Length: 360
Ligand SMILES: Nc1ncnc2c1ncn2[C@@H]1O[C@H](COP(=O)(O)OP(=O)(O)O)[C@@H](O)[C@H]1O
Ligand SMILES: [Mg+2]
View 1: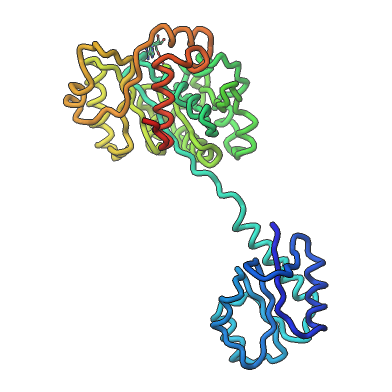
View 2: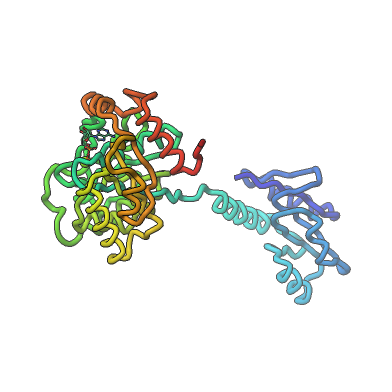
């Protein structure tokens, strides 16, 4: 992190000493021109008026003076001066102060940890198209240049690797076994990278060790860590409400509740919305109802469904059995097998809407 320094110093000896300090610290350089800079080192005398400090256009100011009295120091302190060097100035004192400033500046400019959005995609029933929606929404977000992780929470019955034809070496059983080692570099090592750009964490193919106490704590730690690493964490939450699934709902920023426009599915939607209100999470405004396999000629239309569930439908993913089946059978995303199909366009629009860049 470079620091530009301007000197406003008259005494030659003082100036030379400070210049030596500047040249001894890497990343700190001497700015000869006027204008804004990171640091001004300023020599002041008796009549100095502290209100003039702002005119130096510097983020930080160090002062030096051959007069050191408590009144002057108090004024300097009040003006937010970072360092004060009594004269004769010692090169090492200036050097230490420059190192400290460089360190502080490095810290403030360091990239902030991401706070990715966690979207938990759950189904009102098995087989409605939850996994298809989760996988293809995640892929569409990755296609838009986002860093996306896809986590399969369906214990035993996870199908994300099947839909993506992914031969993953690890699943989150690995995380459970090594919870004490869990950090971003360990996690990066066990995620599988798919050609769509997605980072995938499949679910374990057996139940051992995932039931009872502790499993929901692991899910909590894992998902929060992933939020710090990715722009989006998409969870295929399946349709059960066990401890781990509830934790996945609790930590989610949004829950996409996938349903068909059928009476049994909409009845389940009503039950789930009621349960969420009882639980206190996910919040009403964070729960989005997504209709899938939507057909214009469907007997139940979206407005009928809205009346029944007393909630707006956020999105309708069209019915396209052919495209979905080809994608599943080839282990590819919908965009890869049928980029121009309505269903792929709809998922792309949903991804754009999700990142707040809707085009129409
Ligand atoms: N938009 C869609 N249009 C047509 N068929 C779909 C659609 N989404 C899913 N399907 C069908 O539903 C089946 C189950 O989809 P899947 O995503 O695995 O559901 P879930 O995860 O809810 O069990 C798929 O094999 C496919 O045949
Ligand atoms: Mg599924």
